[in-house]
Structures are given as C-alpha cells and as structure tokens.
Image (cartoon, rainbow, N blue to C red; front, side):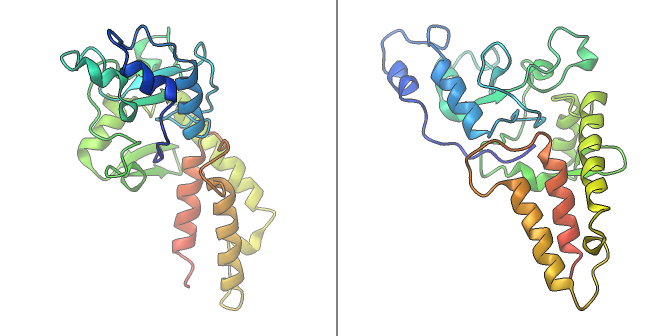
Length: 226
C-alpha cells in the first residue's frame, strides 16, 4: 500500500453532483476511471498490482462503502471517497479474494488517499515471506481481515519482485558491502535506485508491487552512515 496524492476531480463529476436527481448509478464514469487510475499511477489502491483505465478490468472503490453509508448518499459522489482497485480475484472463493472484492461493506480505518493517515508509514514488508504487516495492531488486523492482502498470490508476487531485484543487485556487489571510503558514493547509488522506483514526479505509471522494493531500499539507506 502507498500514499495516493489526490488531484483535481474530473469536471464531469463536479457537474454531475450539481445536477438535480444525480446519483452514482446515473453518472457516466469514463472520465472518473481515467482520473483515478492516473493519480494512482497505474496501481491498485490497496495491493499495488497493475490496473488499467478500463471499467471491465478494474473497480471503483468507495472507501466508505455505498451500502454501509447509504444514509449519506452524497458521499457516493465525493472524490476523496473514490479509489481505483483491482478486481481482487472476483468470482473465486472468498478466501482467495482481496482488496475491494474481499472488503465488501467492511470498514477500513485508513484511507490511502488521506495524507493525515499516511499509510506508508504504517506498513512494512517481511522479506522472507512477502507479507505486508503493520506495527499498528488495528491496521495490521485490517490488512488481513478487511483486505486479505496476505493471500498467497499477493505474497508470492511481492516476494517475486523482491527476489528479482535482489538478483539484480548481485551484479553490483558494491551496493551491498560499502566501505568507509565509498559509502557516500554508495548512498548516492541507492538514492538513485529509490528515485527510479518512486518515480521522479507524481505522474506516470509505477512498477507493480513497488511498495516492497521501496521499503527494502529505504531500509538499506538507513543502515548506511551519512
């Protein structure tokens, strides 16, 4: 999971909210899908696998679910409440589902698009298993019980990305064993790698499951003295 920087909502959504008798069901969502996937840089809001701006291949997630908060129908059209999610293994047994498909009407205490929640600071990855976890007990439980982010497919995908990255590092041993003499250069090399995975701006697609690599690089950087 990563922090999402919300941009300006599509003009069509703004206009639709001002239209009498407007609701979520009678809103044409093409522009909304494009906007959500673009601001999330081509990644699912929860598991970080790749998604495309195609309504048949992704889902619009209401962080506050539509049914649970039906007494406040306006919230269904509020941009801060809308995210782009993967299909989450829709149609498969519930134990194999994840993200919005598994979440359903359950509540999630943190919204990745709310900067005050800062979900990136709450999660970490276990490099031996590919699991995502949190030191916050409530959020840790939600990662499993609300989003099912440690289902086997996601654990294996994160672990596969990390192993491929580590294999690449085998060709650059200086990064793994910096000496006192070259630690400044090595730190700069790690910072360059971090910039490549984070992207140089808030635009353009990121690599799937980049969160585990970014977390791992930051841990390496923290161990190199300035």
